[in-house]
Amino acid sequence: MKQLIFLASAIVIASSGFAQKGKKNTKQDVAPAKFVLANEVDSVSYGIGLNIAQSITKDFKEANLDALFAGMKEGVDSSSKVSVEEFQNLVAFFFKRKQDAASNVRLAEAKKIMAEGQAFLAENKSKQGVITTQSGLQYIVLKDGNGKKPFDSSSVTVHYVGTTPDGTIFDSSINRGEPATFGLNQVIKGWTEGLQLMKEGAKYKFFLPQELAYGSNPPPGGIIKAFMPLIFEVELIKVND
Image 1 (cartoon, rainbow, N blue to C red):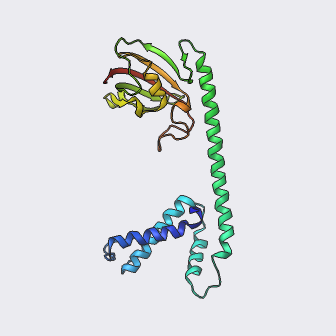
Image 2 (image 1 turned 30 degrees about the horizontal axis):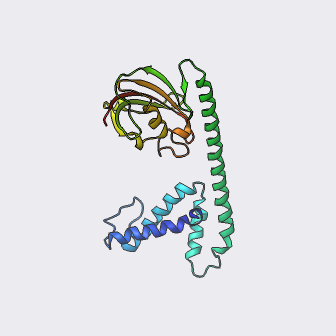
Image 3 (image 1 turned 90 degrees about the vertical axis):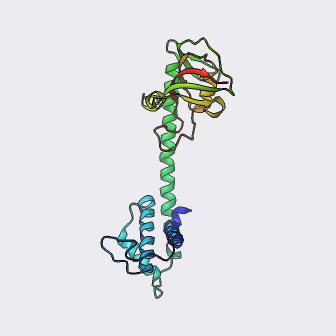
């Protein structure tokens, strides 16, 4: 339930972080623009504040800072009659609602991408030159080869360009200026299957259904979305073993 305790977690993180640095935090170590840190306690307090701010920015951007500061002040005031328990249900309900809303957005996006991908592959399947395997892999032979064919355990050297269905390039060995070498048992299923159809010197265009690509687990931080089909133009340069 990190949504319920993100402020407390920030305090713990800040406290452990400063503890690891030892007792050297003085006003010379940290120099905030509008506040003088006269001693270690000031520095630790300021650090906890920074961590709380990071948590707020990440999890609770709509926070009313005046109310938040008032709650903190009341919370550390031993004479205060306000207790955390009075607000636990309210906090829990608020963050549960946010979590559910975010989950619904992600689910709707995933369903949309999956439907668009299925429509794309259904249309692409009927185009001239497209061959479909039993697994659902689609491919076009752009150039035949006349060398060795790899096995599922082979190491290969290839040039390739990977794009999303709308043509956006997300990876390219050609743009990097050097081919890629890897084992066919180390890549996504569509590559393992597709490259075994090729001979050295061949160039194919593959259309991978999402289940032969990254499925629900795309590489983090990139443009590939969950359940998105992918397109690759691949030239098999060499079968290494």
